[in-house]
Image 1: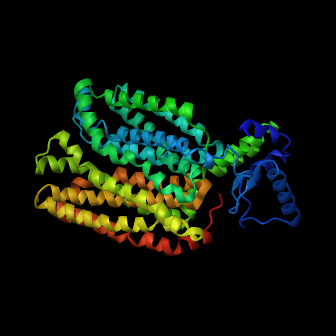
Image 2: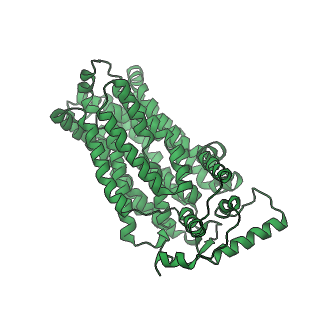
Image 3: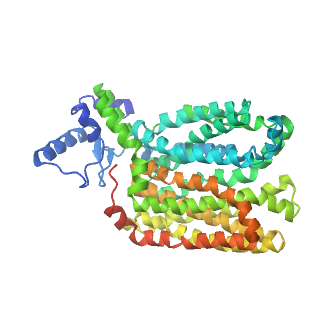
Length: 506
C-alpha cells in the first residue's frame, strides 16, 4: 500500500486536545513523573486509539509504526536509497572539513590584501570557525527533534552557502572573521549525520555505516591545504571560499531531490496532525520548543555519561588540532618538505585504518551479543584507540626531537590518527544507541568542549614546544591522553547503571 493510501486509511484518528497531543507523541513516562490512576487510564486509552490507526510504541516506549512494513518507516527503505543519503551527508561533511582549513595556504595573500602582517589571523580564522561549530549543535540538534531532520538540514546548508559567499566578498578582516563564525554556526552535517544514521539503521548496522561519515576528517586535512594552495595561487584567496559555496550548492541539489524525512516521531506526528488539520496552540508550541532547545544542556549538565564523554572527546579533538596546526611547520623546517608535500603528512593513513577497523568490528561485536547487546558494547574500540594515542605522541615527539628518519615520526602521527578515529566513532555510536530519538541532542552536548578544545589548544602549541621541546612537549600530551584511559573502561562497566540512575528528563 502506498504512503498516501496508508494516510487516507488513518483519516479517522481520534486526537486529544492540542496541549496533550505533543505529550502523546513523546515516549510514555519512565517514572520521572507521577500520574493519578484516572489520568493514567485515560492516557493509555488515547494511546490505544492512536495505535489502532498506525502509530504505536515499541518495547522501549518509543514512537514507532504499528505496521512493520509501513513504507514511511526509514528502517525498511531500500539499502541503496539509505546509503545514497549517507553518501550525500558524507560528502557534505567532507566539504565542512575543507571549509575549515582550505584557505590556510592563502593566508599570506589574504593578509596582503587587507594590509596586515598579523599572522595570528591564520589561527583566529580557524579557531572562530571551531567556536561556531561548537555552539551550532545546541540549536541544530533540538530543532531537528522538533521539526524533523529535513527542514533543519536544508535551511542550514542554504545558510552555509550564503555565509561562504559572504566570506568570499568580505572587505575587511573583521568582516571575514564574523562570517567565518556564522559559517561554523550552520555546519549541521557533523551533528545531524550520526542522528540520521541512527534513524535509518538498526543498532547492529550502525557501526559500519557511521564510519562512512568520517571520510571528511580523513580526506580533508590531507587534500584541502594542497587544493587551497594551488587554487589561491591560480585564482586568488577569495576562490577558496567561492569553491566551497559552489560545492555545497552542487551537493544540495540532489539532496533536495532525493532526501526524505528520517526522524520517526516527526513522520508520525505529521501523519496525525495533518490528517486532523490540528494546529498546536502557542502555549504548547512554546513548551515543546523550550524543552527541546535546552535538551543538549540538560544532557551535558545532568548526565554523567554524556558529560564524561564530552570531556573524553574534547581531549582527543584538542590534541588532534594541536598536531594539525604544527605538523606542517615541523616537516618543512626539520625535514625540508615542500608546501604541497606537507599535506601528505596529515594523519591520513592512521585515520583510514581506524575507520576501516570500526567499520569491520563494531557491528560484528554488537551482533555477537545478540539480545544482550548494550550501547556500552560500542566502547571497547574507544579503549583501544585511547591506549594507542599516547604511544603515538611519545614516538612522534622524541623521533622528531632527534630528527630521526621522517618515516618514524610519521608512524607516530599515524598512531595518533588511528587512535582518534577509533575513539570518536565508537563514542558517537554509543550516544546514538543509548539515547535513540534524542541521540542528536546527546551528540550535540559533546561539541562545546570539543570545539573549544580544538580552538584553544593549538594556541598553546608554540609556547609548549618552545619551553619543553618536541620530545617532552609531546610526551606531556601523551600523558594527558594516558590519564583519561580509565573513562571508557568505567563506562563499559557502569555505563548502564549510570544511565538508569541519572535519567535526563527530555
